[in-house]
Image (cartoon, rainbow, N blue to C red; front, side):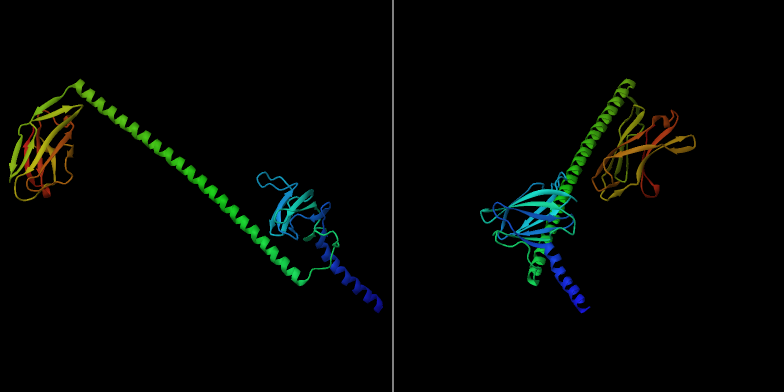
Length: 332
């Protein structure tokens, strides 16, 4: 019974390193030899060479632009990292090492199941080296972990760099599109402004033509000037009417020493005992209703002549605060 237990323990002890050796192997590849590397999808296989890797040529290299190819290949110092992107496949690989590429290694790449795939393949240039060796030592495992970490960091750096390049490309494209949209908007705005200016010019010309056809009518003002406390209110002797609008120009001058502030100018008509303010638009050369000593303000009152009947008495008022009367002139 004890002999059977000892035999089982011996079998278990021997079985463990055999499994490890199938994952990490050492092969000798001479000048006229072809080594075999087994890979599997989802696992990166590290191939270590005795010299620095100079060039790599893969028969079925993966192209991210087209999505075609079976293997992703990267190199760092003496290591080549292989990762298949397809579940099944076969290709070959040539690796040149040395400072001037004096050594060339040839391999067949196979995509196999997870249990059969190599994790680490140590390549020896001397053909006298035996095939598989025993399980790796603690130092070998530590070195392999450092190199795997370096490879992972390299892959992460590549991913970040590619992401930044793609982000920069997207940003550049977005800025270009924004500039094009802004330029088109400016062109559209300029076109609309030009059209508006043309319409305004056409409207002015049409009004002028109508005025020429209808003729310019005029009404003589009854009073043309009044002076109250050295503040003079003057109107043109004629009220001009054309294109269904009447225009009366006025001038206000302060000849006194004190500042004068007025509330506004209005037209009022009297029909019998009724006094009504005539709707009018005042266009004045100065926004403020304020005159310092020696100042002059000129403006034009525009109103509809149909608002004033033939028998109405039309008066122009200059009013101050609280609607107080500063001056008035009889127009009609």
